[in-house]
Length: 427
Image 1 (cartoon, rainbow, N blue to C red):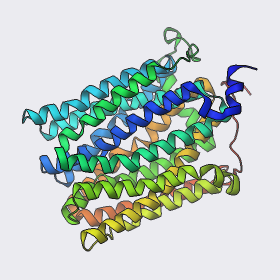
Image 2 (cartoon, rainbow, N blue to C red; image 1 turned 60 degrees about the vertical axis):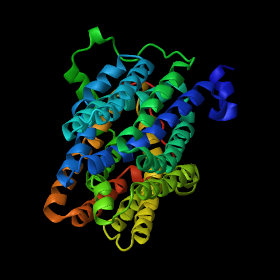
Image 3 (cartoon, rainbow, N blue to C red; image 1 turned 30 degrees about the vertical axis):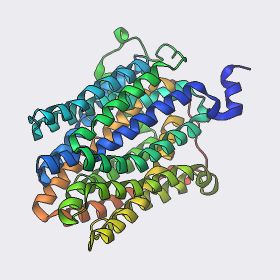
């Protein structure tokens, strides 16, 4: 029996290389959750940003998903993934550390935040596409749900502790210096990746010199996503949800501080409380999948994550009451997001051949994350025109349009996770 067969008996808890990948990404996610709260707080508290500027900042963070995801997928399919992961982490470490450095020099301005957010986003694109393509080379296909569940669960734990830590750090040392935690976390993650013993096989795709051209390879990745009805439905629901939910999330910190008068620490606790829902969603994914089936579980997830956002614009009253309503909204939203994330990632990996994973992930991210900067700009524009509360109401109602994507065939009728071919080619 080979090593992978022996590992299967003990599950991924006994898989040394997966544990290293898991541990390094968990540390990195804790740091990134600090930045998720601290970076917009830098803009609001240190630079007095307004709604339009907050929309631009969020758009700058996610614009790389629209601009560089597709060529990144082609490039990653022609290279081993781990060196890409290491390089992306080192670059993000340096970029994030620039914010406290510029703040210490009293030279930090909003254009600097836009540029750093965009450059960090480019490296995050490379990391994310390579990361999701790397896992199937590290574990067996029948371990993908277990692996993704564990990764998503610890991401949820990071979301529980990270924002609270971020809010506390912002109050103690200021928003810019709080970002040093994220810079250090990228260094730890890099060390963990370098300790993995598994050596990837040579890229399954053709040699870069033999490729017919970038346009053809990009088109192939888009065709994989569009022609497969499962991938098409999952991409459609994610893009719709991301477009409208980002109109809410891009304004959240400004809304919480300006309209609801919440402190940085209380905002961090609200987001952390919401992450408990994500942890519950990921933990219950396997049980719900077995009881309801894949399709019904995904429908439940999307309905809950979208409907919960309706509570955000109605939050009002004393800070404790407003924070409680926001926390309730994000608990429900997090539950749906955690459940849908594990199911969607597992579906994508299950139906896609190994040699097309990079291009599929890239085209999927192009379609789904590419909607986020437009959602951020939409939220910023609506915030300037209608006010923060009305803008968030429009985003919350719009996110419900993601539900119909789950109702189409074959996703709605899926009972079990489908199994696709190991390699592309004629059936």
